[in-house]
Image 1 (cartoon, rainbow, N blue to C red):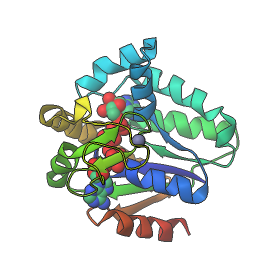
Image 2 (tube, rainbow, N blue to C red):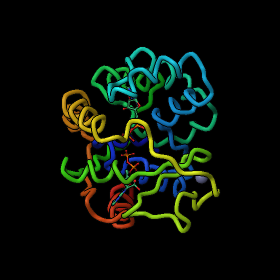
Image 3 (cartoon, helix red, strand yellow):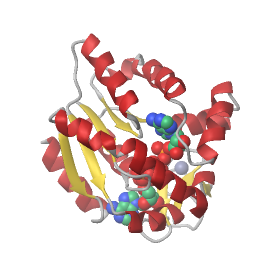
Length: 213
Ligand code: ADP
Ligand code: ADP
Ligand code: ZN
């Protein structure tokens, strides 16, 4: 099964994608996580990506596509995957469709996690991420048992550089101009499904399971 997660930054794509990946035993592929891993390891790609990410802008399509196409060659992708944060532009979506078509494959579902802008700032402001395992929590909506420590691995939690309020507003405007058009794109492809992302985490997941069947 191949799934694309759509939605604003902070809508809960990552949270749901991790749950889908565990349930269907497919990899969760997050371009944001891959960029952050590269930044942490000080790679050339990481250095280039960081300039854009810190400003709340998108990393150029060329760099992003190179990275994701390489990721798809990993054997863990044979039974599909859940994409989180990719595609984020029409050019990326077209490149993805073309690369699947070349293999006689297609995307099965595009799930839009719908959350209004007014909830987004709150979601990203309270987000805490584990440096060690990538786990995501929220100080209000999904607090850890011990403050500042990851429930999954005990690692230290941090605030992402790009979750600061100034950057969040930039990211939201980038979302509306560059990423939101994908909703139309996947509607036309006939695979768009929308879930109400303002419900609690488990309720959103139930709605997604109903769609995936
Ligand atoms: P969020 O979970 O808040 O939506 P991500 O972790 O997906 O954020 O992405 C963080 C940042 O990484 C983005 O703001 C952007 O700079 C960069 N990024 C991630 N995925 C892409 C992509 N597909 N194309 C361009 N830039 C990307
Ligand atoms: P995205 O990947 O779309 O940027 P995340 O999955 O990282 O979003 O979620 C953003 C923040 O909101 C995190 O702190 C997460 O714990 C929290 N969150 C995710 N889903 C919900 C929900 N349904 N209700 C309340 N908070 C949520
Ligand atoms: Zn952890």
